[in-house]
Structures are given as C-alpha cells and as structure tokens.
Length: 159
Image 1 (cartoon, helix red, strand yellow):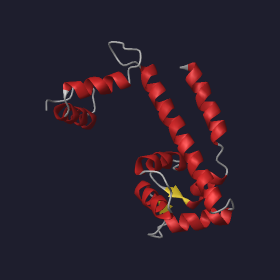
Image 2: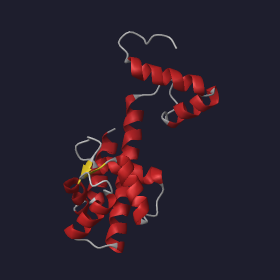
Image 3: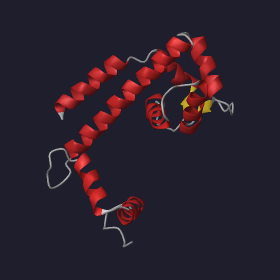
Image 4: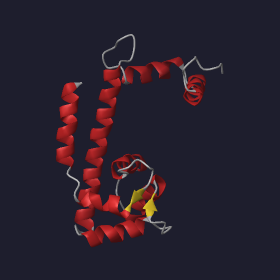
C-alpha cells in the first residue's frame, strides 16, 4: 500500500487500502450505492447522516425489544435489573464489555442474534468508554424508546 495522502490518518488509510485490496469492484460499487441513495457521483455528508440516523433508530428499537423481553420474562424492578446485571457480569468485574454483554444476553436466553445484541450495547454505554456499569444498565428501566425515536425523527427531518 502506498503512503497516505497528506493530512490523512495513516491507520484509517491503511484500513481502507486493505479493504480495497480484498474486495471486488462489484462489491465496492454495492457498498458505495448503499450509502449513496441519491446516486450522486460522490457520497455527501447528508448520506452519512441518514445512515447514522437509520442505525440509531434500529438500535433504539432493538433496545426497546430487549427491555420488553426483560420485563416479560423477569420483571420490572431495580432488583431484577441488578440481578440480571450480576448474571451477565460472570467475571464479577463490575462492568460489562460488549462481548460480555452479548455472551450474557445469549446465556439468559435472549432470542436475538449477536449482531442485534451488539448494536444495543452502544445505547447502554452512556459515556462511550466500552463498558456498561450497573448504574448504566439500570437506566434501561427508564428507557423510553418512543421519545428517542421522536428525537431521531426530528433530526431526520432536518437533514
């Protein structure tokens, strides 16, 4: 791979160069088309904003499903959420990493796949440190997916 263009991050450029080497022109065209709904010659910032909003809406819906599943199967109290957290935290570290959360949800019997469960973690990780504390997890009791979705819809209208 060649040197990154001036002003570009070497790590990001290397990842892109490696991806380009591994993929076919057809696959690259498909990916480009998926983030370029207007069919423009270039991907615009609004295209990325729409993609991020779609991802956020999907994550909110998934977290809402997880919350409902916990309510229906275990209950709605702070104590229930504390016990679930402690069950998920098999290493007893006091925090859940993405992997621990995904593995724990699966062991609890959560009926969704790994990709679905992984996407919920970002909404639980309130300070974006890659960890969910008991306090963060218990915020799921207060989670109101409809309000978040209304806010996301308002953002979508502005894009």
